[in-house]
Image (tube, rainbow, N blue to C red; front, top):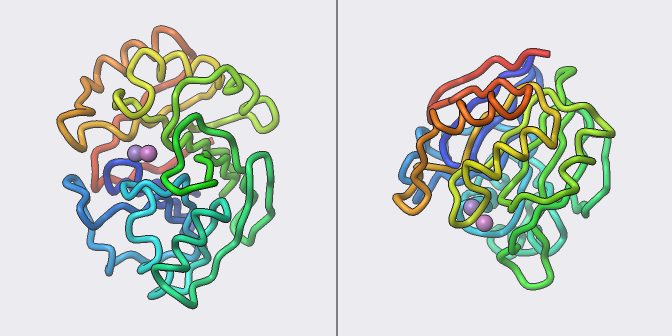
Length: 226
Ligand code: NI
Ligand code: MN
């Protein structure tokens, strides 16, 4: 069993009933956030890059909960500067790690990192018997064809907002190249500059790929299925 709790933008939590993995915890200042950062419990926090709409409340939540923050070293260094005494685990592109909740692999993303020397990333998260690909902030890139090759993907969380990341058309191509079974669009409608007609994305993607698109609203929980 694996639950996807969506808090808006690129912020979500995966819960297998035993472990909670929080991703890109942008609560403070997030106009669509549906929870207070003080109310979040988690064991691990995964970060895709250091832009404030992704790194967000990670240092404060890690400090309060004792959660281990995972990211590239440059991003983690920024977290430690904000909150001393937090637990971090550095990784880099292409690396995998077995953790108590499952296995994660850090994947490349085509985006700026928000910190000198850093690099933006995505993750393949194997948890509760389900393979979830979180693309992070990214442009469409050809190597997406390889991401699902190693671990066939059940779910992909793809940015569709355009302007800063892929837009509708490119994110539909991404679903096709990833050969994924389910897609959850994220990183849209947070601000006017990334407003999108998500129904159009669903129609386009389901025409172009084998993926079923699940539109999850901020505050909603989706039970992920194999
Ligand atoms: Ni960004
Ligand atoms: Mn972003």
